[in-house]
Image 1 (tube, rainbow, N blue to C red):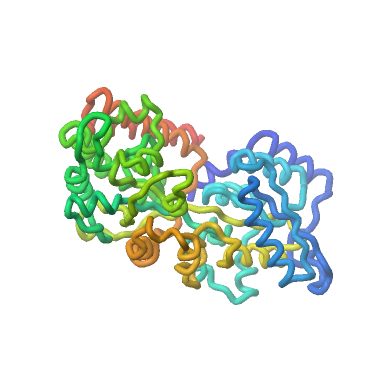
Image 2 (cartoon, rainbow, N blue to C red; image 1 turned 135 degrees about the vertical axis):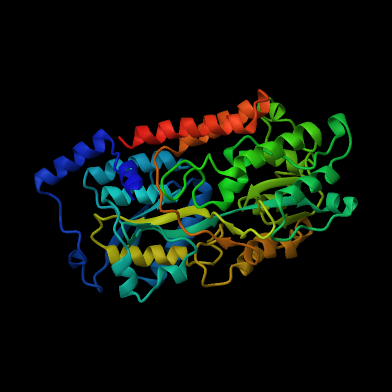
Length: 447
């Protein structure tokens, strides 16, 4: 797609200069599988990521297990910038441009895969899948493709859902919502769950200041949070006017959510708002599964129920965007088969080493979640948790659009919503402004 190629080929001057220098020096070696060492010869591969101390414990378990099963492969773990994925990618790009042999690396999102596939520094996986008799579409929930070839292995998934205070639901006589409930029904729940006044008030729901909360319909149920599949802004989508007006109704009329001015003014913490009981519902993501039972860090006594993200209208498909981290193999790797074997091992590993939901869909991950919540079941409505995670939603296919300016569009969304809710402008007026601003950004990046 023209848009994707244009955006992803926007290399830094340093990267381009170093790549040209490397090519001119004639030091580059063949990247074909013929450069692989004999299968029985011991090889060492390097695995790059951004592990901090906590994450490293999981990686060390993976490596220990892998090397035990594959004694002819040693794995060297390199955490480039612990705890910072974006700075890690910058350092990784410099290494790639300098001619460093990169075997396996982790990326924090799908766009990072597309961008490096366009640069030619990531190895396509088609031949490796074929050699191992694997169909990626049957293996993983999302499979990035660039110019018709597969790149990137989905290691873990991050999806959204709604947390609900079960005690508050029972008191209001409300059932745990099922898949297919709508945002209109969410707003009705919020009204019924709101009680009290002043500092003792329990709001029905809490919306944070991220783009996710400005319009979750677009952020969760569309393939790309900011773009249509033909490379245009999705700020013209009717869901923006609908959800903006719903937010105003909930804040100004129903008074069932904390005012946006308070959210940004007091720099509120969404975890605190929910676990302190200040809000009975919270749109959030799978990273909150562990937090729900972590009463040491987040003291609370109530049980939490889980529900899928509401849809716009009754009958809408319950397909949701699945984010996550992707493993990739460097085009410069001299041991691509060993690198692929390690990437597959990590992505399909459901042992105690795993601390996140897998992107691999061929094995039941329920026992993994059961281990995570073991001994803390009193804080979980287990049936709704399992149903929400495994029975209620489907993954949206990967978008064909990749852009390098998502942060700029996210800022436009935030600024537009602020104009709407703080300056009392109309949704139509703000939506037009957002679309106009987005078109400027898109046009600038097409040059």
